[in-house]
Length: 164
Image (cartoon, rainbow, N blue to C red):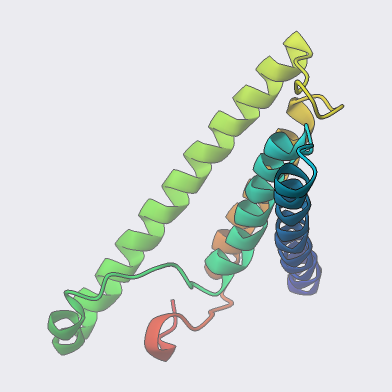
């Protein structure tokens, strides 16, 4: 099971890299076309939004798995003196992250269903709006799986080599 999850996480990592690379390419082509030829890509704005969403949510899988979220270290000195409190705070933060991700996954799923019912399409990009949002929902579910992998007994090092 863990091997399958790690394979999926590797695919998400690759999706993040590819979408960021395409984001740069599409932006460069759009800007060059706009400045040099007076003819921008009509669908660039929508495609950039889709690629940005894919890169963020695909990257979230590994960020959750490796506990690499941005951390404000104002209380680190205090927490270092109290290891039990530090572990309690880590667990509380983990619970908040999991709850927020679960809520976000539910909200995205509801939005996918609404967009699917109305068959709404992008204005310039020839694609239904629910398709990329469904991919984002799948990435959120995978991200929730990375949270749950911690509960399965597999610990991953987080901040300063501490295990979760």
